[in-house]
Length: 455
Ligand code: PFF
Image (tube, rainbow, N blue to C red; front, side, top):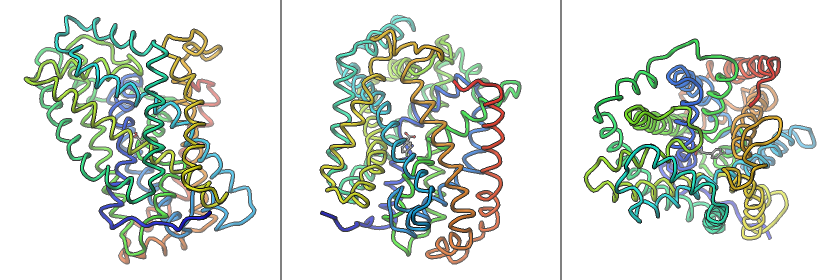
């Protein structure tokens, strides 16, 4: 049975939902961890440049294609050019959605776990930094809680997605994002006033050392920009299909990109001073923020309440992102395969759950998945880089080419001009989609393949 396509209630509803998709663990967990591993400020600068130069253009491309075709991530391609290989770009996006969801919900599960730990008083007295490392290792290496929390998160996601677009997603996004912002601001202020180490942390985070930049870090920064803005797999095509013709795509995309980047930069501004103040290693990996945030809470009066609140809101921010990840395969199954929303959500959710189990046991519970042969990283890191970085980069490469050349920049511009007749960014947009983004991506990919250093 096919269900009719819903629209967002209004423009602000769409912006909140798209911002809800963009703002999540990518900003608060992944961005600091990638920055720490890829040389600090030089990475941050590259990331911001990519958001402005490529991310914004790519977001507008996805939104306009989605709104024009009124279709899902795969159907949008076949609507423009039926029966061509372009549909594989959509297919890649749909699979990427399930793959990212599979490990993302493991991390989201940790967030829920940390909320309980904070309430339970685990962090009310922190003797030293080693204590936090031990708590994290013990927790993430426990296969039972990791799988259960991962399952719980997938369940919540499926539950919301089953409820449909505007009712489910909008309601959640609208109230809670501003609250997350407020707590984050508090954390930044506290972190900046911690005393010793703050200067060093700020230097690492804000003073670029360009010797740290190479093809690998450039691709990581691009991948981070795309991941954070939910681009490269058709999320914004799908969300764009629910926007009304009278909305201004340019200003919507700009506000989403702005707030998303602001939140990431704030998260870094809280993490790095606190990290250096406590003598931790910035390249600490996936557990980084789980070790650093509790340290800041402990230094705030009533910190346990803020801490628990923070982890609850972070879980909800993650939920508004996992909803958008699941929505990609679900809207494909509804549109193209005529499944009911309910069955589609359950089926895609079960698949993501199963695919996420190796990630859930890859932090010490299983020797094999914790240290994969040949590449010597955990399964979770592998999924994060392979899908969170490379698949989104390849997807964006083809989406840019598709909108720039195949669908055609003229048609795309026409679509954007609905709701925004004065489209000053037109020329730059065309240049970015047709040349700048594809060439940038191609050159760094070739260079990376040359050096063979993919992970
Ligand atoms: N942008 C989300 C985040 O930063 O947490 C993650 C994400 C959602 C990535 C949707 C990709 C996507 F299509």
